[in-house]
Amino acid sequence: MSAARRPLPSAEAARRPAPSAEAAPLPRRIPPPPTDTPAATGVRAPYAAGALTLSADGAYAARLTRGGSEALGRGWYPERWTLGGPEPYTVPLPLDQPEEPDTQVVPLADGRVLIRRRVADRHAFSLLYPTGPGTGELPLGTVECERMTLIAPAPDGASVYALAPGIFTTSVWRVAGGSFGPEHVADVPGLCSGGVWLDRTGRVLALDRRPPGGGPVKTVAVDLERGGEVTPLLQIAPGSNDRLLIADPDSGLFLLRSDAPGRDRLGWGVLGSALPVRFPECLCPADVTVTPFAVQPGQMLMPESCAVALRIDGAAGSWLGVWRPTGRRLHQFAAPAGWQTGSGSWSRDGVLSLPYAPPDAPCGLARLEAPEDLPPRAYDGVRGDPGPADETGTQPSAAGSSPVGYRPVPLGQAYPRSGPAPG
Image (cartoon, rainbow, N blue to C red; front, side, top):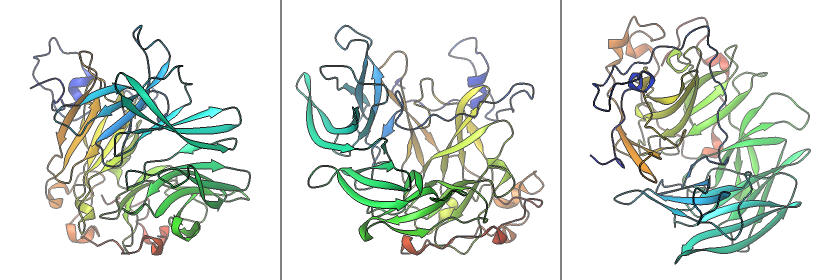
């Protein structure tokens, strides 16, 4: 098997030195880090220098990287990864001068790369593409504002949006995919961050918003075709901070982070469903931070069977987790050496692709099939797992047809923190 496509080793194997590359694989389970060693809790921000960003369909990726040769110099430059072909490969996209470390890049579905640069008091946008031995650049225009941050590529693969927070409102801009360069789309009252798409058309965007007068952070749904009409999406408790981390438009499965249970915990729910938000113990292991980064698509009426890929950060570094709501178990694996931490995508049939940069090749793509979960009753008696399946509330439920109509789920409908945490 070539280095560009290899299966993932067990997580334990990555944390213990092996005498050689042919050493026998070790058990999959990862013991918790020592209690006297503080766990790393920082999560790298998306679009930061060196972070890999995937296109909406996962066929391309882009990052800002440093040159390591005389031809590319020693400064920062954009690099595009092609992941959708038979073998992954990279294409450097340097221009006449190096980029600043705060430059952001986002790949489009057609292979071009959007780049955002800070130029004095403006943010300039261009599309980069390979042309012969060099790099072509198509300027799109500029936006004058103090701060601007790109969000996840829109589902259509051609549009990219950005947030420009002000004193009392946050402006939403379409900086690629419009007719005449950057276009102002909406103004949302309050300070907004995040950016999760709730549909496949790129119409409804979920943002984490702090109200203009202060108060807890709540996720709202913004309808971009109605001038930025705002609808509450997450309201777990009146004073809790509730942030949407990821959502799948097909099944409606979403994961959030909320301090409603008494401390920040990872929970899950189904958009458009009457079922409560749940905070399973398996998603809150001690001394680590768990962050979802990909949800299996295409499970239209089976949100509880969707596989979710999670990044786990602890004192020993970063590794990989896979979880399903019905399984109620967090499977843990070692990430491939050189994994572009926190990046990856699922296929509809449950294969996770993880881009990585091996020492002996420009890039690679490791694949992991979602592990099988035992029937729910097989987990009875395990700490944090519920009892009989018919008491868990994890029966399949369809997502609502209109994401704008999603109603908030109050904590009063969720399981109490003192009782078992269904998975």
